[in-house]
Length: 193
Image (cartoon, rainbow, N blue to C red; front, side, top):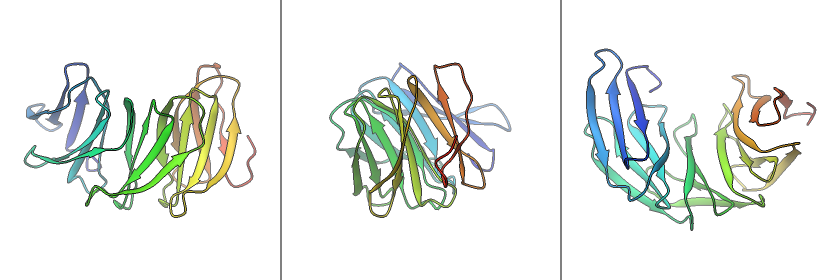
């Protein structure tokens, strides 16, 4: 969690475990997914935990009580990663179905369905100002999306599969994680590596 008080773990046992970092005790075991859980993220305000699964769903949980708040459906295949925007207004998910979905975490409504990758999408991350979303795929590309309009702003082609992306705190640099054994920083403003 942003305050460092909670840590979440997930796995093939179809549960999420929420732990206290202060005491090391298990606070909640969250059950409900019908497939392996691929990823989790805790909202910036610490109130919600999002989990995603091979069962094609995203689930939102109350971190205080451990109760399921809602189940988000829309992907047609396994969901790999979830990420909250830092302004708490959006949740992104990506899937084997080659799409990225942006949700309103409070209502569960789909705000955008982003299509532009041509293979499994495995990673997403919001910029620090919550205006851009980066996604990465087995298609060897990173896409930058405008979260308001859903428009593709830029595409970076890579020499190998990109497994993850992370923004710098200033928001102009993006660090991809790839199997090509290199570390690169991408200036998203200029498009230069």
